Length: 176
Image (cartoon, rainbow, N blue to C red; front, side, top):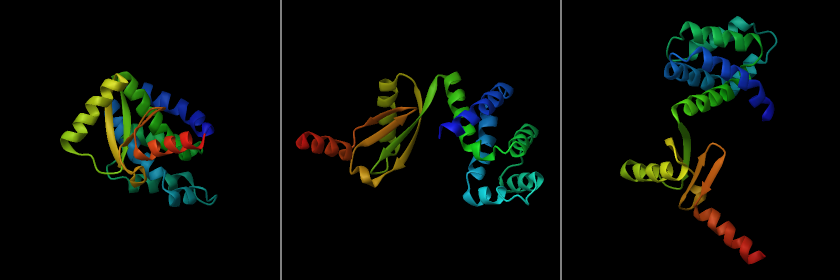
């Protein structure tokens, strides 16, 4: 959705510039309200024309686990009043990209057919950091369709060493 990304970029840039003193704290509350805003039932509630913006704000502020700081309240009110609540998950993603670029790191998602934990995860992380040339924040997601191996997504780069991908390559080679 290029349109959502285009809408989210100025908000993420402005928030990043305004929160340079506390990037981690801002990322924490931003991720929390983005998770709430991504809920389909909340979106249905927000789309109701009979619901006032104050009611939407109170609902979101009441659902989050921790009290929102004043900056978070102001940011949330601006998004609600401008009808940009649907862009909040993308704003959070773009904010993380800005935060990572300042720190010289990236987020990596490792898809695996089986759980990767402990020393195995440390070895995978070290190999990926060497391969991509930067510090990585690695999260592991289970995808049984991979059969074996891993598929790694870092930004817009994908490294697929899964059995599923190799079988697809073999199928394409045999069909040619």
